[in-house]
Each structure stands twice: as structure tokens, then as C-alpha cells.
Amino acid sequence: MQKKISKEELLAKAKKPAEDAMKLHPFYQGKMQTLPKCVIRDVSDFAIWYTPGVASPCMAINKNKELAYEYTSKCNTIAIISDGTRVLGLGDIGPEAALPVMEGKAMIFKYLGGVDAVAICLNTKNEDEFINICKNLQPSFGGFNLEDISQPKCFKILDTLRKECEIPVWHDDQQGTAAVTVAGLINALKIVNKKINKVKVAMNGAGASNICIARLLMSAGVEPGNIIMCDTKGTLNKSRTELQETYKQKWEICQKTNAENLKGGTADAMKGADVLISLSTPGPDVIKKEWIKGMAKDAIVFVCANPIPEIWPWEAKEAGARVVATGRSDFPNQVNNSLGFPGIFRGTLDVRATTITDEMCLAASYELAKVQQDKGLDEEHLLPIMDDWEVFPREAVAVGMKAIEQGVARIKMSKEELYKKAEATITNAREATQMLMKKGFIPKPPKE
Image 1 (cartoon, one colour):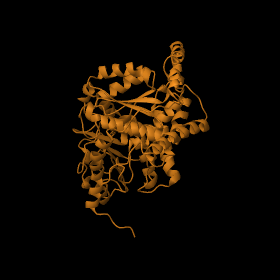
Image 2 (cartoon, rainbow, N blue to C red):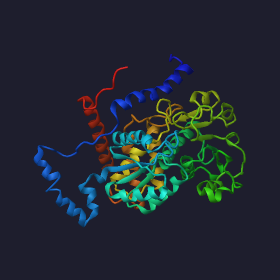
Image 3 (cartoon, one colour):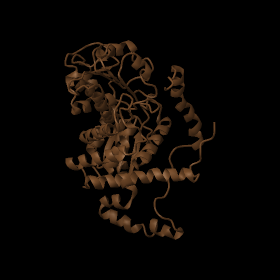
Image 4 (cartoon, one colour):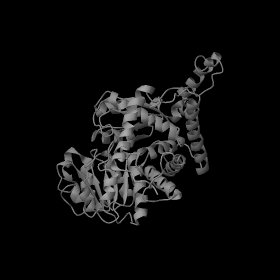
């Protein structure tokens, strides 16, 4: 019989990643490095890779800039770009303090998706300057992953860059969070045997993540009128006319959702709700146990604030929630962007897509959900974990095929060809990292 873990032990477990991070970050002094990917048999090879040989590919690209994808690392290299104004649950901590997060993202991109990613933290809070910097960086990269940018400017930055850039631009806090959350909800609804077009969804927090989640939920079949979203001032409803000029994205939510025009706060929105999706202030105790008690039978609770969920998962269970998910890897049912962005970008780069559409994100959601359905669903196994490496090539195929279908792919391949390419690239990245560890080039952490 499995031993029951005490609340004290659970709390200690929750605090350990932060304690380890403070030891290992200074030990490694960063998470990424630059290594050659071509042969260097001896220094005479520099004549091929640099001068004089390099002049030939340079002139070829000068005649046809699309050849940069064939002759350089552009085909598999993206930039992770942030201004450090909304980092995890930490807020506006600045570009230098944001760098550990961006490096961590780059590491995950490489290990799980085989994507080379460069962390770039900008020393500007001006949205127009941010946009101009990104546009001028395009020649060096095959795509941009926007990260941890405060709202509402993150909407303008994403929309403008998607419209004006020649390479795919995506904001992981919006599209990535939405894709994985929708996948989680698809499977949670299977567990509780509820239909997506019938459920009532309460959403706590009206930031970029939840607004994009709401949009993708509607695309997946949730009735717009059955969604009630709350910000710090209460529910978004048709009387919130102050948002017309100040926050057009919230005003659009006011117009599309909350069919009953319910007024009040999060507690009111949660009454009788089948689903809670909360991405708001880090907890614990932001969501109250009594609010969960007032939800519908077999309630689904996603409390995904970082680094601490809005309520501890065991407390949500005690309050009557049947399925509980958080954004953390050390609890069951992690609903985390890391399950989405490596595979989504892998597929995007492999077909050389010019953009990442909502339909491509939704294709990733369905495939991510299907991976766990194939493995077996239960209340503590809602989604695959990052160790389930097959998630990422399968997502890549789903995304790539949708891009081809929508006519935004520069390269067309079959499902089999896409899978083979994604699998090989991801396997190479994982095995290279393991080899560096085995040979001691990545040293072992110091002992406790």
C-alpha cells in the first residue's frame, strides 16, 4: 500500500527546485553554449568555413536570400526575445533578471525539439522600439519566440510582427499556454464525461494567456457565452465600457462571453462552473477552497500560476475538484508550455512556415491530447510528461501538416517524411547532450 505523503512533505518538495536552482545556476554559469556543427578535421578546414571559401555561399545568398535557409543555421535557429516586464510570476524584474528564464527556454527548445534558440533580452520597454529591433533581426533567424512581455503591449507586438515579418512569430505566453491548456481540457472532459460545447468555464485572470486560451477554447468548441472571465475588478461583462478605449482585447471578451452578463468576482464566476482555468497571481490561497466547493460535480481545476499555483492541488482535491492541474512539473498533471512549444516550432521550421496560425496551435492541442489518450487517461495522468519524447515529433507532424494544408508552408512533405525529419533532429539533440555529460564536458553537479 502506498504511503500517504503529508502536507509538510509536499510543501518541502515544492520548495526544493528553488533551493537547487540557487546552487546549480552559479555552478554552471548559464545553461547554453555554442559548439560547431560542421567538421573541423584540421585548421585547413577554416578555408572552407571562413575565408576564402565562404565567399561563394555569400554571393549565392546575395542573389537569392532564400538560400540562407540552405547554407546557414537560419533554418533551425530562433530568437527568444523578452523585455523582462512580466517574467513568470515575478513581474517586471528587468532584462538581466529575465535572462535565466530565456536561457532555460533555449535549453528546452534544444533538448525537446532539436531547435537552436538564442536568448535575447532587450533593454527597452517601448513597444515600437521592440518591434523595430525584432524586424531588423530577421536575417539571422528562422523564427521569433516572444516571451514574458507585459500586457497590453504584448498584443500589439505580436500582431504587428506576425503581420510585418517574413518569418514566423509566436508569443509563447499566449499561443503556447493556450495550446497546452486546451489539450489538457480536452482530456479532462473525457475523464469526467462532459461535452466541450456544454461546459461552463470560469477564468480567473484576464492577461494575455487567458485571453488567448479563451480564443482557442472557442475554436475548440466551447460556447462563448459559457465562458466567464475575471480580472482584478471583477467579471468581464458588457457594462465594462471603460475597457473600450483602454484594453480592446478585454472589451472583445466582454462582447463575446458571459451570455448572462454576470457581475461580481471570481467566486461568483465559479458558482456552478464545470471548469476553472486560473492564470493569475501566484498563490497559495488566491483561489479559496469554498469557491471550489461551489462548483459543479466533477469539477476540473487548472491553477497554473508560477511559481506557486493559486491553491495547492491537494487542497483543491479536498474541496471536491475531481481533476486538478498546475503549471509545475513536480505535481501530477503539469499543464506547461514546455509540452507545446518545442514540437510546434519543430514542425513550423521543418516546413519553413511563414507564420504560426491558431489552427496550427489547435492541431498541436489535439495531437498532444491524443498522445496521452494512447497511453491511458486517468485523473493524475491528464497529459504526457516531458519524458515522453514522442510527443514532440508527433506535434511537429500535426503542425507541419496543418501549415501545408493552410498554404503557409514553403516546403511540402508527407506525414512520414515530416516524422522522420523531426525524430532525427530531436534524437540528435538529446544524444549529443547525453554524450557531453557522459564524457564530462558537462560536469556533474556538486554533491549535497
